[in-house]
Structure formats: C-alpha cells, structure tokens
Image 1: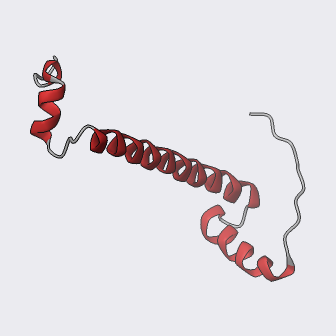
Image 2 (image 1 turned 30 degrees about the horizontal axis):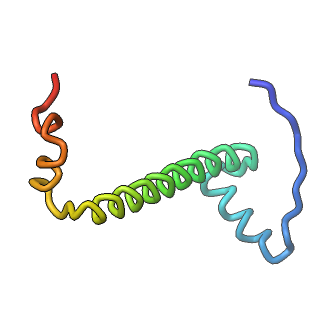
Length: 84
C-alpha cells in the first residue's frame, strides 16, 4: 500500500481531544487513528444512506396504503414464496 503524507490543520482547542483519540484508537499513531476513523465514517455514511432509502420506501408504501406485511403480500404476491 503506497502512502503519502498530507497535512491538515487542527485548532488549538481540538488538539487535546485529537491526542486523546489518537492514543485510544490509533495506539498513539495518527495514521492508524485516521484509518480507524475512515472506517467508522464510512459505516456512518452507509447507515445514513440506508435510513434515507428506508424512509423513501416507507413513504412510497404509505401512498399505496400498505400498512402491514399482509398488505405488501397482496401487492407483490410473487414475492410471498421464499426463493431457494
């Protein structure tokens, strides 16, 4: 894995928190901390996208007056049987 050094600024008031988090999640290594943070932030982004998709799907179902699993089965009878 090729690596490149990049710089970014940290406000003085954030430095103590950054150092504490780097120690806890990166073992004192800022690069390791950043890698851990990237994984966490990616997971948060995916969760947000899934929530948005779920909300949009629920809105579409509400328009079609689907309020229960049984209502959904009536709309999509071919999906009522498990596929193997």
